[in-house]
Length: 264
Image (cartoon, rainbow, N blue to C red):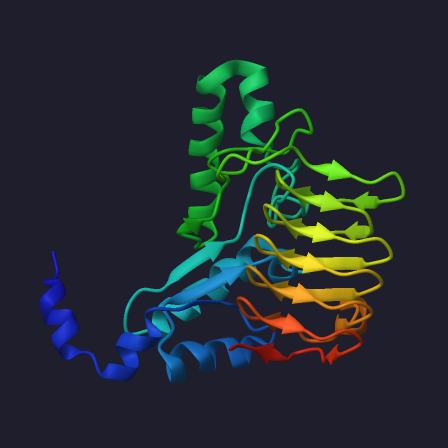
């Protein structure tokens, strides 16, 4: 076995830093190889686009080129293979059917079925040169599986008669009177009437005042967004995410531009 201390002693600072990162593979094959040699990356994560329009032989040769070019054998990861998210097995050139989720497998044959599938999946990925799978350890894909927050004792969520909530996680203690979409809402948050929150994460005890608009933003704890204020811009426009730090008050009618990062 190679002595890890000897390996570290032989590495430059740049090589050590590069090994901390497993990055998304650049779509251009030449640029990907250059990233391995120039930035000394710890490896790549592969997505469906990396397998599309390729054959297993193509992928094996590509992964071998990375191993040959790297000073240290790189991690080659797939971001998920199994269940709702499949990357290689979604393409018939690689497998006739998608790998199933652990939950579906358990329903078919218990833990023995999961074990057999996991072994098959490992051999499937290893054959392609992939040595790391960000596979789901716990499958929460069913709508009948509730997710509970960890928080201090709070009152139940209150949703006003004219509130609108779509695809959100609303923690206890919240009061929602306005519109909230595609967002995670922490404990004790108040979204007042006429306010619009979309594609956001709101930490605990924030207040979004009436007619304020908060889009594609992270709002830290104890922040107040004043009446009629605007934070961020629609995610669909390609805007960068806005961030408002803990305890800040955005004045009524004020505007926080997309990509802004405010702190006290």
